Every structure is written in structure tokens, then in C-alpha cells.
Length: 125
Image (cartoon, rainbow, N blue to C red; front, top):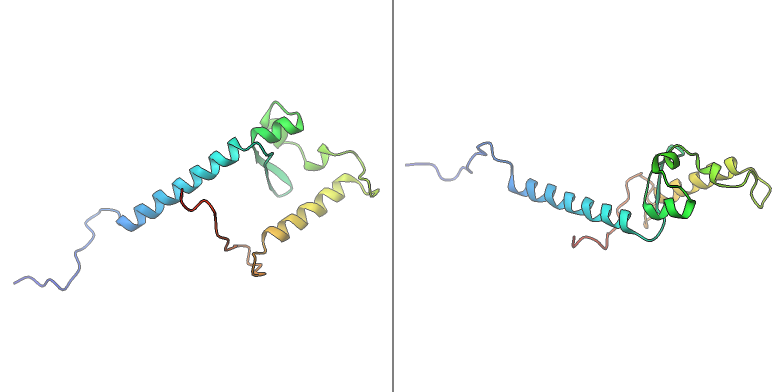
């Protein structure tokens, strides 16, 4: 008589839960990509004080026809040499990027772990 108390072994097939989770993550990424690309609002993504991506609305707003040209531009170059407070734009841009990074790394509970736990209105996608 076979021992039926043991669960069947995975015979080389991916775990169904993992496949669903992966498919769900891909669907979320696809949904966010569509929102990013189709948004009428200008959206830019910065990393290490450089643009790494932007949508068409950002290109239109900034007057760029070539996305790669914008991605090679430092954010401070899009501003006048000096800001209304008398400070140079490069220093002001660095300060504002630092503030944005610190703010983005803090969730609604005040956690600053670098990973935020925020609920998404797009979970149904």
C-alpha cells in the first residue's frame, strides 16, 4: 500500500503560485509602463543626478525631440544659471534632488529603510 501522507514531489514543473506571482508582477509592470508612457503629465526618472528615462510629455514640455539627448543632460542645465534666490542652478538642483530622494525613501509611517510599503491603487491590474 502506498503512503499517501507525503505530498507529491515537484517533477520539474514550476510552482503554480510562483508562476501566478510572476505573471501578476509582469502585469503590474506593464500597467505602470503604459501609465508612464501615455501620461499627459511630464515624468522623468533620475538616478545619481542624471535622467535615466522620461516620457513623451516630458520631452514635449522641455522642447526636446531626441530622448537620448535629454538623458545626457544634467537637470541643472534646464534652468537659468542662477535661481530667484540668487543660488546657482547646479547647487539648487542637487539640493532639490536630495530632498526628493529623502522624501521618497520615507513612507507614510516615517520608515526610512529605502523600501517603502505603500498601497497601490493599481493592484487590480
